[in-house]
Amino acid sequence: MSKKINEEKNFEGYFKIVKHKLPYWEELPEIDLYMDQVVALMEKYLSFHKLDEDTKLITNSMINNYVKLGIMPPPVKKKYSREHIAYLIIICTLKQALPISDIKNLIELRVKRTSIAETLNFFSDLYDSVFNTVIAIGKKFSKRNESDEDLFSDTAIFMAIGSSGSKYIATQIAELNKKEDSKGD
Image 1 (cartoon, one colour):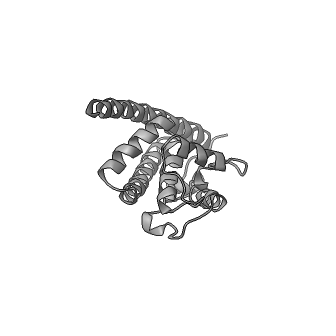
Image 2: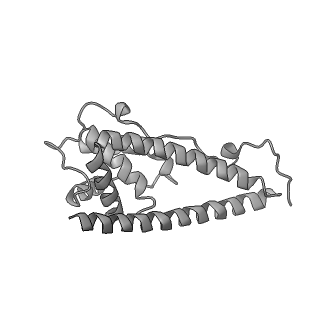
Image 3: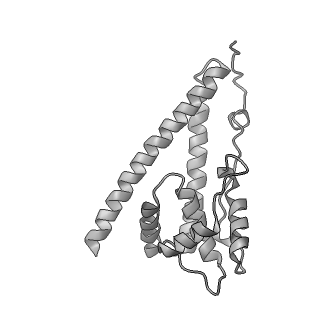
């Protein structure tokens, strides 16, 4: 049974999309934190990625692996600074779409040109801009459908295809970055 979609329907509310933003450097804690405090803080910052309460976005092991892989600096006396938190915000967000090796390379390239503080602020601005663009595209697409049943399935398919295409392009560009970076060595 098909209902006509109300043109006034709020896209974000209809799909239960929570508007969120990533923190900027100035919003990060100025005091150093222990591992468990970092994990709790990251869960708070990135809770919008969770599909359910059992999903773990970050664990002690993940953080240790990121340090071992050289994606982020090691803690100092078992404490993590805002620098570490900035790296983790970027890593945890990008790992939704890119392999960890590409993330490492992209972060290194960016931090070589600026600082981790500027990189996080750039990343947070870009995330907000892209998220708003995706919402706008989703709103436009969803107005094409005539029934609630079509709206849910077609919009989900549309967004998944967009995500897949974006991931493909991102990995191609990351691969080119690796090749260009290795030429410079």
